[in-house]
Amino acid sequence: MQKTWMSLTAGILEILRGAYLLLAVFVLFGFALAAPSAGWGQSTGLAFMLTVPIVAILAALCIVGGIYALKRKKWGLALAGSIAAILPLSILGIASLVLVIISRKEFD
Image (tube, rainbow, N blue to C red; front, top):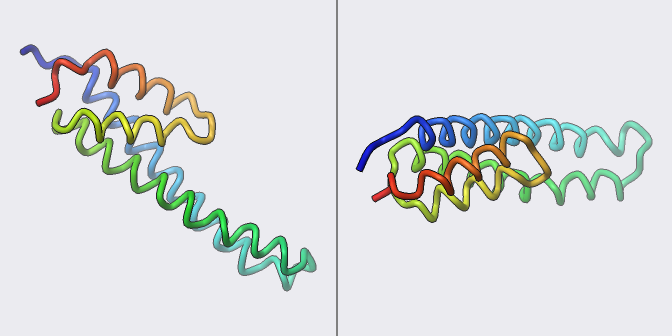
């Protein structure tokens, strides 16, 4: 089985998307803490606080999937990471999904 650049690139794209989502978690958490004092109200702070765990789970799944894509192991987990990288709609996620699907034969 020949190893190509596709799974390596997909892994890098997934990890980059996961890092971006992790940064979004910190921003959302900051907004959740600042919302009541900024006059946005409790419901806005609660809405930000409810989105933090969802985005954190997506970020973790992207990073783990990217690591497995780099190792060329567990294609299903690499695929799940690239699907998580799409949400919300992202060019990096779409590119990583296409590359993971095309490079399926490279995985153990």
